[in-house]
Amino acid sequence: MSTNESEYIVQLEDVHKSYVMGKEAVPALRGVTLDVKRGEILCLMGPSGSGKTTLLNIVGGLDTPSRGHVMVDGENVVSLSEEKLARLRLRKMGFVFQNFNLLSNFTALENVQVPMVLIGRRDTKRALELLKLVGLGDRVNHYPSELSGGQQQRVAIARSLANDPPLIIGDEMTGDLDTETSYEVMELIAQLNREHGTTVVYVTHDPRMSKFAHRTVNMRDGVVIN
Ligand code: ADP
Ligand code: MG
Image (cartoon, rainbow, N blue to C red; front, side, top):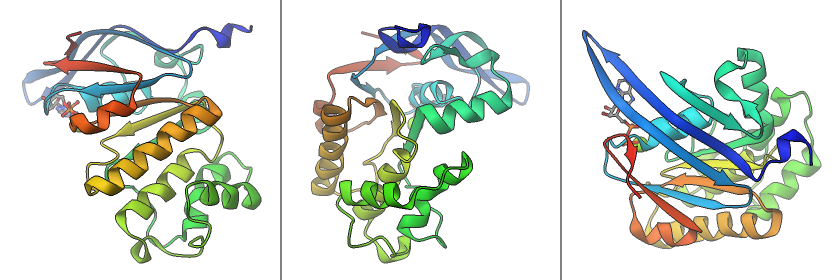
């Protein structure tokens, strides 16, 4: 095993984050210590404002902690240069958000290719395979506006897998989807985990969606409470 191959893909130690609002510091995270094992599906739950999104953004290198340690796949995220962090994000992580975040003037196929283009490796065959994998083999040339919410989220999931990352980060992935579509999207996530060993860390406030996880962690007021 190389140093990157520790049992844990994510390691957070005493992570704090405060946002400065005018003269006040708003604490979003107040000392989170959490490890995620390779191959695990971890669900984060907790009331609105408890720090779930802040935590995901810090794991994803989209935000920086005020203090604490953050390791992702053996890399110390906090000390990486912008360039190395961008590289880590593109190769090691896939992001899925509540509002899909697809580019509206790109087709499904082109959306999936965006992360590939960003690392200089456009692979149309692979992008088509991924769209097939998420059940959209017959929709590859459709624009987001020509797809249902569930289909758009499937495109976003295919895009998150574009560079074959070991870790998927999902923030309220099913928040804008009806119940049946939510189950379908979560089944797909679980399938990716079973068949490819992809680690998944996702936030939901729907207890029905937490049953797809191997482990659920609850947050409150910026700390983990179980
Ligand atoms: P959750 O995702 O659990 O609803 P968040 O992580 O979004 O919670 O927010 C945690 C706390 O941090 C909240 O009090 C929120 O208002 C605050 N917060 C989050 N992002 C920002 C920001 N960019 N600027 C200021 N305060 C923020
Ligand atoms: Mg949130």
